[in-house]
Every structure is written in structure tokens, then in C-alpha cells.
Amino acid sequence: MPTDIRIIHAHDFIKATPDGRLDFERAKEVLLEIVSASSALADYEIIIDTRRVQTRMSVFDLWYLALELENLRKPFSRKTAILCPNEQFDSAEFFALCARNRNLQIRAFTSFEEAIEWLVAKQT
View 1 (spheres, rainbow, N blue to C red):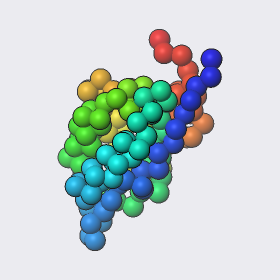
View 2 (spheres, helix red, strand yellow):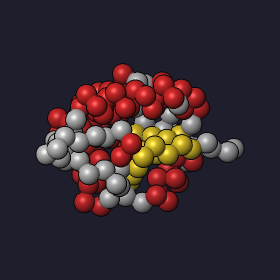
View 3 (cartoon, one colour):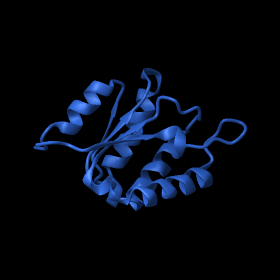
View 4 (spheres, one colour):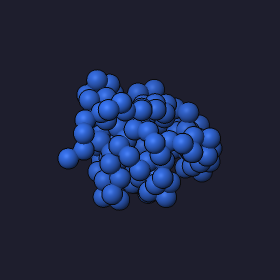
């Protein structure tokens, strides 16, 4: 059975302040724009590619973004893979854990191929 996958580049919605911190309000606005423009994402598995994000995120930032994804549940109702560089894996995994605690199917990966394999695997 074919799987439809959409890739969202996080640098499109993760915005930073001049000192490199996450700009919550701007990131939330852009995320809402992406979601409204992609309302059909509910039928797709998603990869959020964070490899080019240049923003430092605290534990609270990651928790808050997971909360925002919960509020936007419909587009993220199926599997979502977070693709990140090796040095950011712990942060991405924490974000995924926060999202899973909100009953979202999210996992962190450093390998594009492993992310794809997980997305296309049958759910058990």
C-alpha cells in the first residue's frame, strides 16, 4: 500500500530573535500559515526536517512547540518524523517524547532513510 509523505522544512517556521533564541510568536504565526495552507496534510505522513535550523531551543521551547502541535492535531494525526543533525538528537528526542505524551505519533531520527522506513512501516 503506498504511503504519502510530505516534508516540512523547519527553517521555514522556526524563527529566531537577533540573539538566536526562538521567537515563539513568529514561529507560531508561520506554523499556523503552513498548517492552513496544507490542510490536506491529515492524509500524509510527515517529515519535519530540522537540519538547517539555526535557533537555540531550551527544554521549555521544545515542550511549548509540542503543545502547539497538540493544538494543531489534525495535520499531525498520523506519523511525524523529526529529522535532525546528530548533535541535536537529544533535543529532538525530548520534543518527540513531549509530543508522544500528548498522544501524537512522533519520533526523532538522524537518518533520512530510517525516518522513511518508520513512516512507511505498518502500524502495530
